[in-house]
Amino acid sequence: MKDNDELTQSLRMEVSQLQGLVKQLGAAENSLKRANSIQEAVLNNIPDMAWLKDTEGKFLAVNEAFVRTSGKSKEVLIGKTDFDFWPEHLARRFREDDLEVMRSGKQKQIEETTATQGKSPKWIETIKSPVYDDKGELIGITGISRDITERKTTNDRLQKALAEADRLLAEAARYVSTLLPEPITSGEICAASRFRPSTALGGDLFGYHWLDDDHFAIYLVDVCGHGVSAALLSVTVTNVLRSKTLKDADFCQPGIVLGSLNNAFPMEQQNGMYFTIWYGVYNKVSRSLVYAGGGHPPALLVHGLPGDEPNIVQLQTPNLFIGGMTGLAFEQHSITLDSPARLYVFSDGVFEIEGKDGSMWGFGGFEKLMSAMILDDQPVLDGLLSTCSV
Image (cartoon, rainbow, N blue to C red; front, side, top):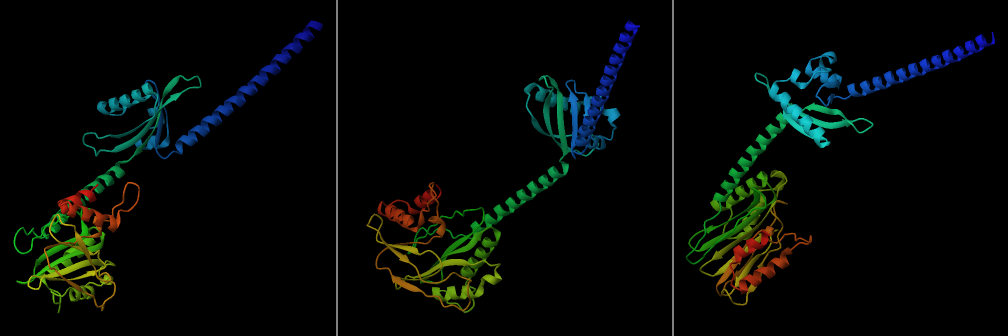
């Protein structure tokens, strides 16, 4: 009886242990199910296509976005490869990408098209990553794919639009260059110029021409800002000066010309744009130069022959820019040229240059360079252009 009681007690203990083990297994199974459920919920909440393949390329898991995009159920997808769903050339390319990621052990981002015959091409952006178990053994590869067809299409349209805009800007720049005056290489007055806007299309423009047999006009217009709007205004103003179409303006009197321009181009009617100008008229009979500036850097008048110690005079008047306030009177000055002289008219782009250390070159540095080149009888325009292009 004692042995039977001991055996019964032992069996009871084993049954109890087995029941405890069953409970533990049940709890573990529930935990595993819960973990799988959470994992699946997380996977399905990813808006992009997400998937996991083994090392042979078979799908082990896919999310709902993948199912919707492919049009196939999970039951159909799991255990299959890309070769079961895609044309061979696409499936081979996908497989080569997978193998590269698994060989390198590194994540890879890929943009690829799924173009097939008879169907509109789709662009897919995919991030593929190798997957390892807790022992560091390669399990396979995981990926997230996003349809970027719309983005690519929009980008292509944008690139075409930008290319067309560049073409139109280049065409406009060519047109502006046709308005520049030709050099004058002989006669009582010689003239040369260099023109290089800071952008494809800028707001600077200049000109020179004979007003009559005795008077020669020189002017430079600098519209605030850059781009098409600034170029259009500078072209308009320059054409007005070339064609002498300002109402009641004596084009031999710079102060009157600037006043007329100021009244004709108020900034509130020019989309808030204004401009500066330097305008001068040389009288070959009296050898006098009458000039006026509207908010513009002074022109530089150099007396004497090349190689002589330069006597540089700044030609400037205390006037506001053009377009700020109508009804203003603009002051003009005059100077008599008793010897051969050179006149340099320029925009602020020749001295508003930032150095490598962040400092601004400024007008003082520009004037020193001009003096040095004139004294050494160097080609001033090309030397200046070279320095400003550094």
